[in-house]
Length: 336
Image (cartoon, rainbow, N blue to C red; front, top):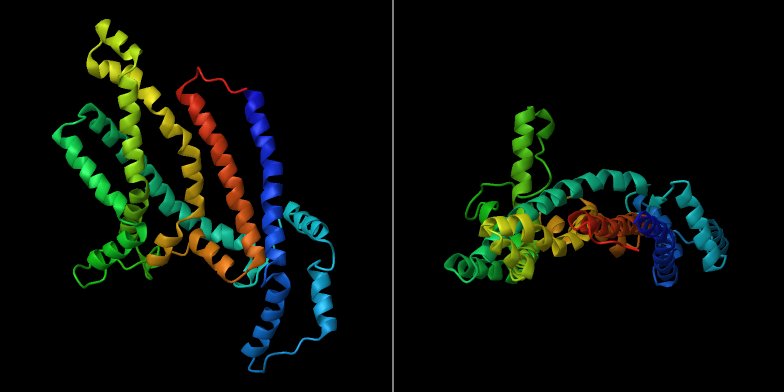
């Protein structure tokens, strides 16, 4: 078992190298690559100083090309980038004119706060609801809740975000919650309890949207998994030995029914750090999702590569965590 997880962790290195090299290759050869963006940056700076667009000579372009290692084969240029990464230098964002590492450190806690809250609530709501639906399969509660789940599943997250914002924050109907952002402008002047209340107010609607994204899938997965375990021979054996139905379910079937949930636990957890672009755009949350969107649309190569590196690392680690949860729930499983 230890060897398996050691292999998985060691495989992270070549996987990361492969993923980053492919994106590095595409970003350098696609229109609007590092050379073009650097030239645009210089011209944009000249315009911002009140002058006309600066004319850049071929000699200056060659200097820029050499500084970015674009005069070398792409493999060598990638090795130069990798050398900087090994010294924890992710480069500078052209768009924000700040260190990429500083931007990630600043935005990551924002996405983590909203994403982790939604993640935990999803499991705390969906697992008990799925169990209740399985135990009352075919009854009125199961039918009504299935209808509600179907409705929530059919509403896109973007539409739900706009609907909640219009209904509860715009002032057109109600003005219970703030329009967006992570905290109020006067947050620093509030007392400790007022700060907590302020954060809850700002998080309430976005977290509902986070939960809705996995609400239907997790609930029905839990229900179907438990129903599948209830029909197994070992449950009937437990009942024949004198266990009550609830004892047979919660002492035997429940743990095994969590296995399908556990397999997606790590990958879902890794998505927390990436943030949700749609939710962050609608609620004006300055997190990782919005930062990633800006990096791609503005062709900010250093920022894009830095975000890819961090998010890929988190995703790969999350997959290993899923395997660990799998073993934790069912110790009989042995990975080789």
